[in-house]
Length: 300
Image 1 (tube, rainbow, N blue to C red):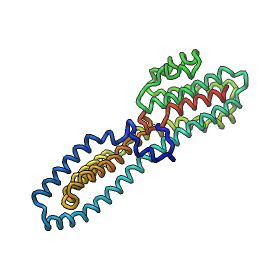
Image 2 (cartoon, helix red, strand yellow; image 1 turned 180 degrees about the vertical axis):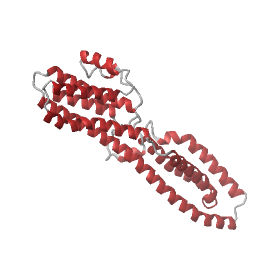
Image 3 (cartoon, helix red, strand yellow; image 1 turned 120 degrees about the vertical axis):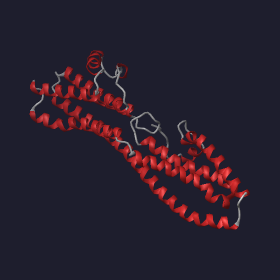
Image 4 (cartoon, rainbow, N blue to C red; image 1 turned 30 degrees about the horizontal axis):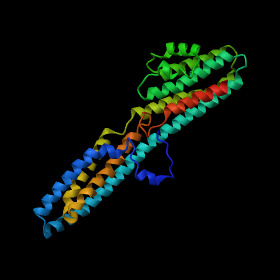
């Protein structure tokens, strides 16, 4: 995720980031500029007359209505994508909070003699956050990702159990639940204590399911495809209608319209899946590391 100063907006005008949409659109903008120049040449030097100008002026009224419709669709597209990004951020915030709360409750409930049990719980909760992060990217959590987070004895144990699991977060969560119920059977956790920590425990798996829902449910294909077609035909028609009025000034105007409309769509495509490693996606690795640090600090 890109970190920046929102008040230093003037430098953004002259800064082109490595993943800036302008870089992605350069080939398309060059092609559109050639197309707009060709259309302008044909209209200006072949059939430019008063009747043609009057006809295009009448069509431009209808074209402006299409532009308004397109703007509404882009607003809906951007809002939908940002809602998905913000929901993902809230879910990882919930995971951070419930992990801290669960660790604090267990710290107060378990006796000082249950040192190994606390270490194992901290290791499981830390592993769950990292496993969820990689699971949402369609990857597997490997040994190297936990080398600095777990003690060697727990590291070897968890890698043996979870490295090849088809759903690593679920496997880790199941192990954590089994451990807590075993502590209950051993008399270290009472029925009342179990009732208190159960809500935080359930919240962890609820966050996992909600993140999977965001990951596996993209914007409907028909809507996304129609919007791209709408932008394409809108930009292609623009020189045909306004070239007679603007002459060769239509070229930069058309390129700028393409840049604005296509950039909005590209930004929406990037943020609608907030769990990858794109510059504007959520810093899930950093948040997982923060969860592991908080849990170890509380339980230690």
